[in-house]
Image (tube, rainbow, N blue to C red):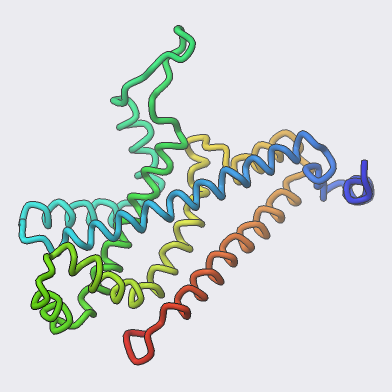
Length: 250
């Protein structure tokens, strides 16, 4: 046991209600680290997918097809007007019953989409619905004259969106996007409801096994999320400043 582990072991001996067992017990340390890694992976994948969904949805909202616009609007209303936890349970328990299964060992049937997969799908679609509206507002901020100039150069609708509208709209959308992505990272804790082994799940498991670790577990969990969200906010703010166009948007 090194000095770091010894410190928390002695702290537990002196203050039994503050048992940082995951700092001196290698088994519990592995559980916390695996939970942290799962949380980071879940957050990163959901952030990326939700942004992609937002960009595609915002583009489809400007489609000439009324059918496509109606689908996008229906998607937005569905995910914006229902709680994310209910969506998560709906995807996992309702839709999960209809997903195909496979048998890796020839005996046990396993769904092709795991609980982690359903968490990623549900949370990405939830945040993506808000991102669609965020990017739509950014697109509407781009002057019509700019788009008309692109049309005059012979660009088609997709080229105008990718090379002219999107770069400008993205800059305008960054402040609101920042807020939504921060909310998404915090919402990943709800994956606990379908037993995704992220950080909250592991911390709850530890203090269920060791009742004296409850105070320590929740304190460390609180600090970790402050750090994770802080890193995201700082990165997004720097990205926003780096992409700001003087005199345009914000």
